[in-house]
Image (cartoon, rainbow, N blue to C red; front, side, top):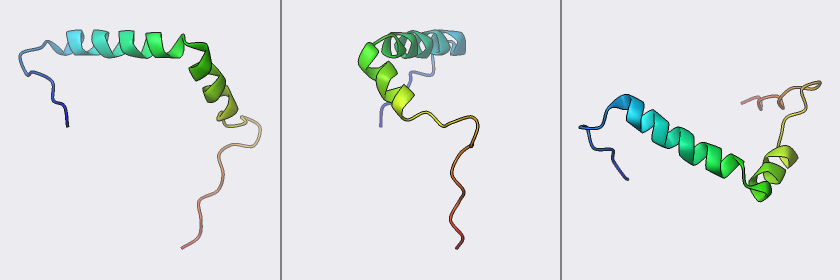
Length: 51
């Protein structure tokens, strides 16, 4: 598992993660996949199974 150098400032880590997420979200193939898997706000998420 990759680890972040503890010498990094937390704001720098957040900026890096934000840039990665922004770049990834801007790619059309990922946006289409996210839209296809989006939860319908009128019905909500599926119910949890009864164990």
